[in-house]
Image 1 (cartoon, rainbow, N blue to C red):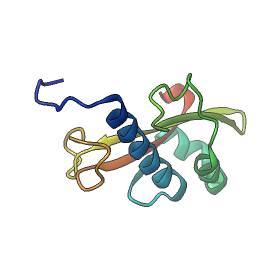
Image 2: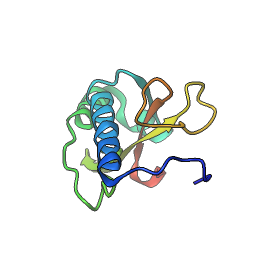
Image 3: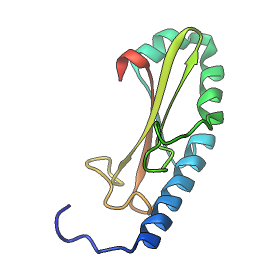
Length: 121
């Protein structure tokens, strides 16, 4: 915190988390509205099965307090073809130079979804 952030009520914080979660779900399930990155391990391992892997990321819905403590749906993991797969969503400014000033505002945020093998995390 820089000291310049506005104080928000718990209801405002919950509404903000709801908005971020909605934007993350929309992006993750469509891959529209951001950038999708594949690590070298995924590129090497997936090969012609990449469409199947991408579908698993899109369909992921096993969020719980352990993997989603802030209820933003910004991280997930699953087993696929004998490998642990992780994916995560990061929030950057529009120029991809630094973190987003407000992940709840798509006008100032570029979402980047990275898909990786577990050992690459």
